[in-house]
Length: 295
Figure 1 (cartoon, rainbow, N blue to C red):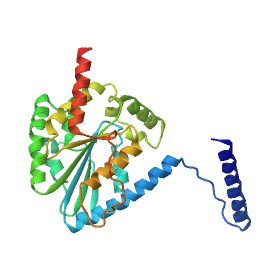
Figure 2: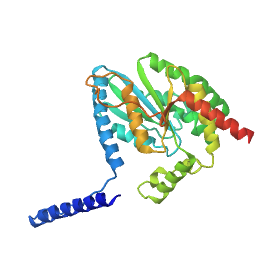
Figure 3: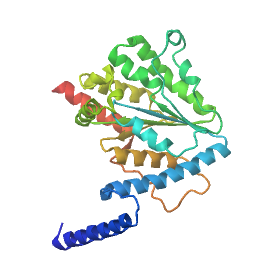
C-alpha cells in the first residue's frame, strides 16, 4: 500500500472512531468494527444477487409445476454441503428441499437399489437437491467394499436408463460432480479435526479418502464413462476455491431455465477454469490414469 493510501486509510479510521465516540456519549451501545477483504465483499454481493435470481426461478418452478432435481456428488470435503447451503439459504422451504439419506437399513438392503431414492424424487412445482445420491454405488461403495463387483457393474449399466426414465417423465435433471485436489482435501480434513464445530463432518470413511485417492479416481472415471450421457450430462466443478465454485454452480443452474423477470444485466457466464463438461473430465482422467500406469 502506498503512503498516500495509508494516510487515507488512517484518516478514515480516525473519522470512524470519532463518530463512534459521539455515539457512546449519547448512551448508545458501542459497536465493534468488522473488516472484510474486498474479494469477500464482492463475493457476498454477487452471491446475494444470484440468490435473488434463484427465488425468481423457484417461483417459475412452482407456477409451471416443473420437477427439478439437482444432484451433488464429489470427493469428500469437496464443498457439496456448503454449495447446497448457499442455494437453499433464501428459498421457500415449502417448495425446495434437500435429500441426504443415511446408509440403507436392513429392509432397504433387500429392495431394488434405486427404490429408496425414487421415493424422494421431486413432484410438480418442487426443487429437490440430493446431497449424494444413487451414485454412492459408483463411488464410495465399490471403493470401500460395500458392494460387490457384480453390483457395481450392474449399477453402471442401469443408471443411464433410470435417469432417462426420469427425464422422459418431465424431470429436469442437473448433475454436479465437485472435484477437489488431494492437497486441498487434506487441508480441509485437518480443519475439520481441529475445529470442534466441524468435528461431526469427519467419518471413518473420510479418514480413508486420502489413502484410497487413486481408487476413487478410477471409480470416478468409470462413473463418468457410464453415466455422462446426452440426456443427463455431468458438469464437473473444480472446487479448490469454494466461493468461486458456489458462484459458478448457481450461474449454471440459472442458465438452464428461462423464467419471468430474469435479469439481463447479470453476467451468468461460467468460468471455464471452474466448470467443465463431463467429457472433458473423462479425457483428463484417461490421461492421468494412463500416466500412472506407465510410470
